[in-house]
Length: 98
Image (cartoon, rainbow, N blue to C red; front, side, top):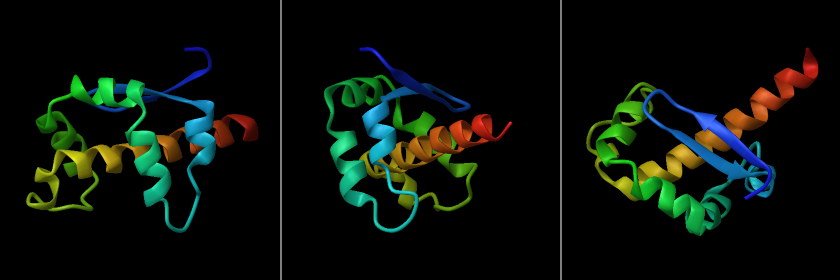
């Protein structure tokens, strides 16, 4: 797959397409966009290789969700997708600003 954009976390790395990242809104509701991205075959296969415990370890560091909320792997996947796409956008913005 050409044009991969990578998001590196403490416990795993993921890749997305330019279209994935560009489709993520910077503000407002993004549930629909996240859901579309989460169901793409290359996203599903990446997350199938990541145990929920690694997702929890990553997300707990943000301090935005409690232990009970973090037990749902699908919700964690959606949180990571949202964070990753916005991190890529921010990184690209910062690189352009240099």
